[in-house]
Image 1 (cartoon, helix red, strand yellow):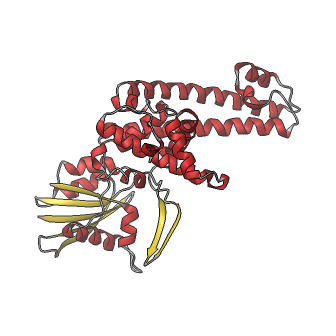
Image 2 (cartoon, rainbow, N blue to C red; image 1 turned 120 degrees about the vertical axis):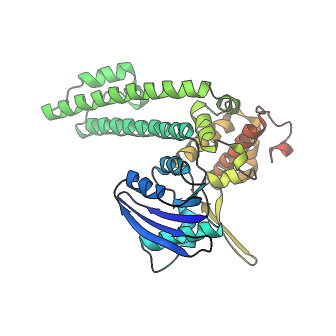
Image 3 (tube, helix red, strand yellow; image 1 turned 135 degrees about the vertical axis):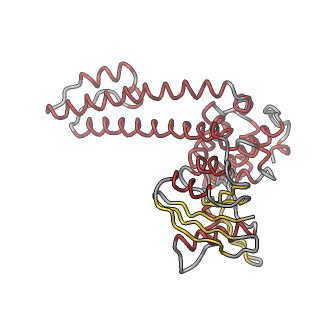
Length: 343
């Protein structure tokens, strides 16, 4: 068995090959595209295992290497930084360290979902980017109106059909301001059309997935939150303990413990920020609509207004643990019959 470590970059790849004794067989740098890397991998004597660090496009590379290698391990970049603390660092050294960790079976791996799930995750993220663009366009329109002291309608009414009609006919002092207004309105209409197409596709996918419909039985959880949680959890069985799902989404506090001292800080914010945001919004809605979720929130808050944010994050953490359990067991949401069951 050969153990191959690859340090992946955009146009160059450092590769180190160890034999079954852990001795270096070959070190090389491949310049070019992924195609050149894969052609070099084909020449390695089989059987062999490959390890590389997760980065953009790690899923595609995993699928291609899996056709050739007996085993492919994608390393967690955050945990690798803790292992690779050194004052001497370059691509060849990193490749050899990856090969060594693979030989020792000490690589901190990441989960690699299927192509369909990766595409689903990316499309969910694409929707959020479209929304962010639309928000920027709306803010630009508001800024344009304030700059020239123009008042049409206030609040969300500005984006209704009537509000946009008034905005399109509002008098502005210069031709450049009029042109800017018209271009921004055209861009806004284009982004609205994009968002409708994206959500139509997402709704179709959500209706075909039983996990999304299952999570929607939770009060306050809509289709967008449910689909994001299902897509990023993917396989509930991959979490050995239910509490690990909170760590995966970065909803647990940072910890610095030594002896009797145990300091807890802000949440780690690891994992997809988009899902954390959706879970927080769902927690707010759940507090409003579910006695069980509201009881949990109030228990953590202890009646202290300054603990409101802490209680909200704790509620989001509780909510994602419930979602993980529901996906694993297939049970629908049930309101707790007593406060004791909320814990």
